[in-house]
Length: 302
Image 1 (cartoon, one colour):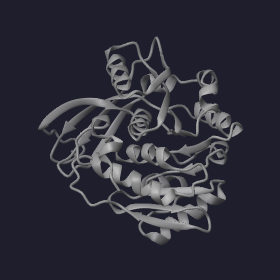
Image 2 (cartoon, rainbow, N blue to C red):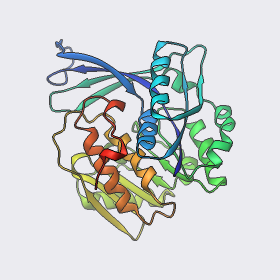
Image 3 (cartoon, helix red, strand yellow):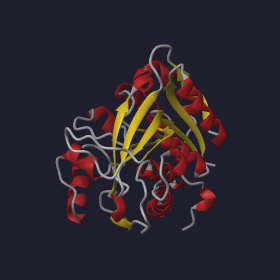
Image 4 (cartoon, rainbow, N blue to C red):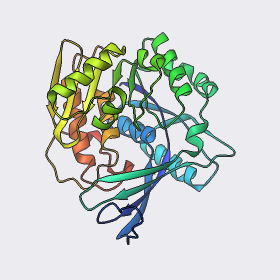
């Protein structure tokens, strides 16, 4: 069984259902409101454990009812939470999701306890990271913590996957050089490289620029179209599964969690792993919400 460690955020999501995204100054009625577990890190960890991987999570929560809600969810899935610690002052992270009738969303984030994860917290998880096959992180937690985690991973031969989300223009060169695989979507890819992603050639151009920045393996997800990969001389495209999209929340996180669970350490099965991840994501988008929409491996058939 693959051993995966995820360093990332925990959020409680409040989903607001509306016809379309409001214009500046516009007042709009909602059709419905619901609450679900979320946070990019938590979503990726839940995806990995539901994909069948032995998954440990490094994160932080507040001392509040939202934390209890999230911890119960993690326990139900069998996610290892020894390194999910409590901050006495900051509240558990929150996300407010505007979901339109076409299934597209805009998201507002309150970082809360997610932003209090320290380098020392990472060092306390050193043994867990060192024993893993793969470590995943994203940008909803402090960069200093991510760099320390990736350092420990590389010292112990652990594969590192960086999801550069939310989009950030100036990623520390130190973090990029510690990254084995970067998995941006088209918005994040453009933010990092300045190259707009709109066709196969632009994906190759983005990948080539990322290679010059020190990253050997690039996967760019492009929503309903699919995903592109580049390993330098070798590249390819995996088409997405065509489904009726209800809500794209957690689709990218599902992709990354399932990718990590399937991917061999030498990346020799990268296309197979991407197809597996794409199928899982196609199931996620057919249900509203984040963690509740992430499928179990028994429901993902290639």
